[in-house]
Amino acid sequence: MKKFQIAIFKTVDDYRSVMPRLIVGLVFLSEGIQKFIFPELTGAGRFEKIGFANPEFLASFVASFEIVCSVFILIGLSVRIAAIPLLIIMITAIATTKIPILLGKGFWSMAHEARTDFAMTMLIVFLLIYGSGKLSIDSVIQQRWKSR
Image 1 (tube, rainbow, N blue to C red):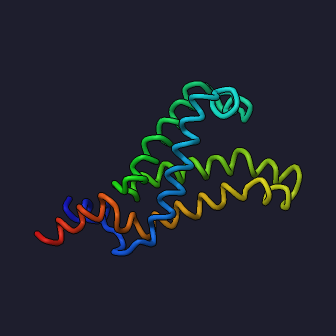
Image 2: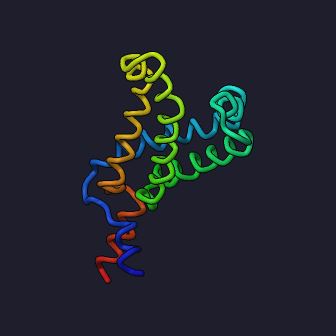
């Protein structure tokens, strides 16, 4: 169990993850909040337009995960664990909204529409690889375990 805990909080001992954490955290926090504020545009209405069953529940479910995981990423707590649901959200978004564009309008239209999704996905992968870095709760926890 201790090895699992160490793996969750293990992080690089530098500041390279600060900017990706801010970008991922703030974008997903904003998107999660907007799903509640503008449900027809970014929440249930969008999920219904895409064709998801039970769009009201799913939009609230996704928005809640976006908000909670983004806060964890912003404060640097269990960043690798928090990144996993966000990666799943991004893969689902690409599969449900960008692949149809690829099939209907071609590669360049899809590439244009997917630029933000691609950038966010790569930043999430970065956080999965490197963790939260310094200026994070994970770093504090890691330092305490090293001193034991």
